[in-house]
Length: 235
Ligand SMILES: C[S@@+](CC[C@H](N)C(=O)[O-])C[C@H]1O[C@@H](n2cnc3c(N)ncnc32)[C@H](O)[C@@H]1O
Image (tube, rainbow, N blue to C red; front, side, top):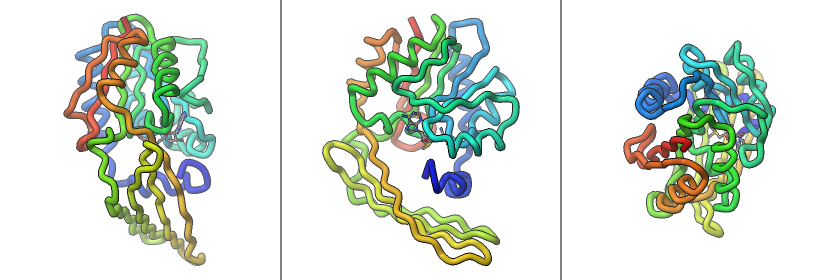
């Protein structure tokens, strides 16, 4: 999805209201941020759809593991710097006031060991009083195994059907996404795209944040149903 299929990302997620999400995150930033500055870093920024709105209020930058989505972000959003980097070990030689990591991207670090490295890295890149806002993937108890998922996109020149199942393998949430894609004047293409995502428990997540230099809390009422949001203020 984030490599060969990156060009379909914005179509597959065209149902997602990035503007509305940004309004909600802006309110949280106003409420919790204690540093004076205006710098925002979007970690695992994907195609830059949140940054398109955040750039009106903040001096923004974005990082993502995959060049393919970054290339799209660069055409979606102007005047924002994008860099290829892994959230587990990136080093920007800079500190910011706000780090956001949304749409469950944090789950791709898979293990608690990597989660700890990532959260420490977030803390190292924040000014005192700055905040991290992280939208997690499900926990083991909120994740449904065997759920039949379907997403479609029905454009004039391109149609996409994506079906998936949800499995649990070695404590990871595993989703095999089966894509059928047809574009005007082209043959139908079929892809299978496997995602392995960590299921992190709330108490352990908060413990890792608190041990990494944050004063952390979990908000049940987040952006998407049953996912919630972690807020950490850098002490
Ligand atoms: C579900 S998408 C979310 C993208 C974007 N934040 C959004 O809301 O549309 C997950 C993103 O995480 C990125 N990603 C996965 N593992 C990563 C890592 N270790 N470091 C940085 N980005 C990563 C993927 O390339 C992808 O763009």
